[in-house]
Length: 262
Image 1 (cartoon, rainbow, N blue to C red):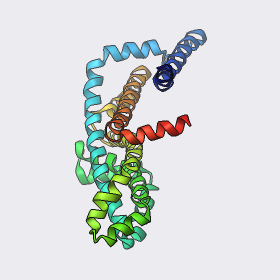
Image 2 (image 1 turned 180 degrees about the vertical axis):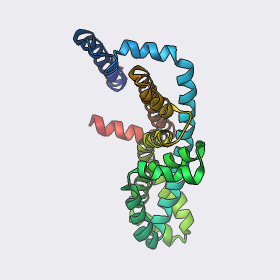
Image 3 (image 1 turned 90 degrees about the vertical axis):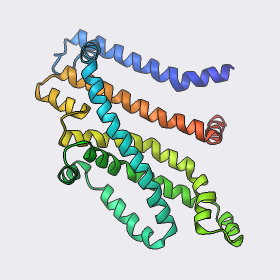
């Protein structure tokens, strides 16, 4: 019981206490040094701005969340399909994999305007940019997971005349699920970044748009309010993926805890 309470405090309580301490230190130093609000507003002013603009922030946060989740879902779907194709076909491993690496090295802000030209200024380009940024993490981890199966197990399945599709679905894919969730934890944050990048380029809604408008008005307090909501959304999305992993892969979570306590 004590061990479980200590682990819960280490996972939740300690980060929360650290965050509160940092906020209190920020508040105290800002008051003590008299930092101008346009440079670095106090946390108390940021909280007041969030309360005052709660309706507007919620409206924009929902739009950003919609683009993020749709882009993330598309990235997971495409990432799994591409990973399976790369593992199954050596030609794609030597061509498509290299192409993905080269595309990932291009700054996404430089590509984002093209999606605006191709898909317009609505929600679609934000979804596409979010998926493009997030898909690489899914592909990399999924390929690693699909290839980490014991070769003897694959040989045994082939000797039993199992088809390539059955080997993928019955052996490789279940074995790759922990790697897939590892990639999803990274991809969900990248999808949020992609949605914001799309809103920076062209949008009339979303937290990215809210930040740009606040910047144009030199309203630093509202910018920090939007950034606070944005970080909260990102944290909630990350822990949603963690919760899904606990629900769908309890044995993997138990194994990771056992290795951490060893």
